[in-house]
Image (cartoon, rainbow, N blue to C red; front, side, top):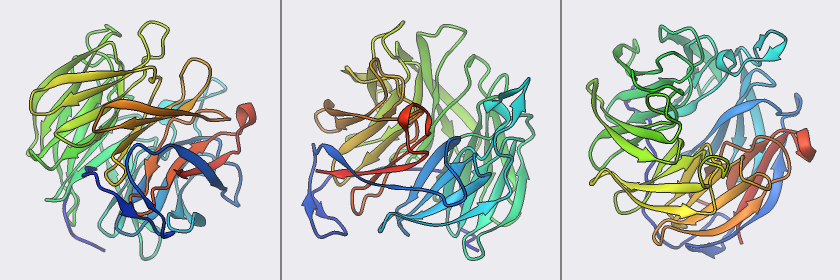
Length: 363
């Protein structure tokens, strides 16, 4: 079991390269579907976050349908197994209750997987035994959602279903000491995807809505020592996803879907704290991922007018490359294997979906 300490983070630099298949590829590439991966235990119809560990090229998925964290080989796109012990789909008044279901957020910290559950706990999975070896209570009543970590030793996790939502900073060292709890008092629609910025050593957390104004959101900037540094303003976006790209920029997964706000993906710069540009004709998104080797952002745009798509954005030009239609329900989670360029999007079986993980690659 690794004792390294960190907070969750994903960052990048763009370059052409050769994938595991031997085929070279570079930026501004469209995607094509190359396969699907199923869980033999049953359809993956309820799920949350998927995370690719770039070091081991393993893909981990919060599979609520099967009450497990599923493990896939991101080199060969094969199912490897599952770790049980999670709540699964919780029910309230006869309907699924997202706020108390789990697993939710998933991230790899050294030789462990940290996964949020629906009862405000984090389950720590040892990757040698593939068993839960610790349970950390974050002190809330609802699910622990998305996570990030700082390689220096701090882990951040977000309780987005609380009122008000809050983030917890936890040491990844043995004992898993809770360092601080940071409440987002002005957040009135949860808190979403965090990311660690290695350039300034701070965490950035998407805040969809401030003071009950759906058109005014923000990005909370947090010092790993346990302080809310500032709240960056972002309008007409309702941000969920957040991923760092080149030049100090990061993309926000705006849920704006054309109903009350035009569908956009906002590109911000951490140095100025301002929106650099809004990428038009793509929005309705939840998670965002970035591949430094293709120089592209990928968006899980489940609520686009006309149906769900994966958005592909050139991170250097901040321009839309393509929108790839997705058949099925709720394709909100997306991550990418930097080594071979494979993009993973779980899709529920409703509306003609596969109830599995769809796999895409650059054309």
